[in-house]
Length: 146
View 1 (cartoon, rainbow, N blue to C red):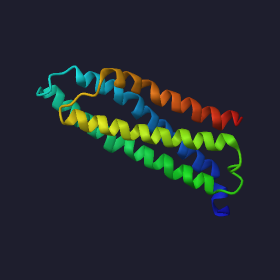
View 2: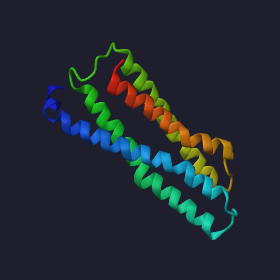
View 3: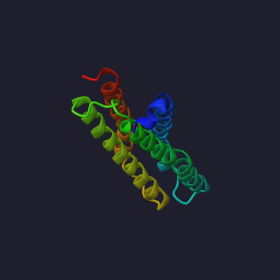
């Protein structure tokens, strides 16, 4: 897709921007869930958290993930942008798949909280670190390209 070559930098900027937005959402959701779990289930505050969590997912995290994936796919279609036989590319791709799976975990936790079931506090605390680890691997692979 040589037609994308003239807009490579714009695609890259859009990809990085949406990855940052996606990561920001996934970093804050476990902390929000932890706070939600401390509230009485039938309280007005718990209901407000349910609405807030849904809005963050539907208006921020999901669109950012779709855009990050979309721009990332456009980037890899540009000839010469990726060395397909490089190990760093495979490690990054596996980490992105894991990060996408974690996105699904956050969505599952959101629905559980909506239904009045709090995930384990230990899992939520571990969930705060998960996107940091995936992000470090992804950025490390892209920048260092070992």
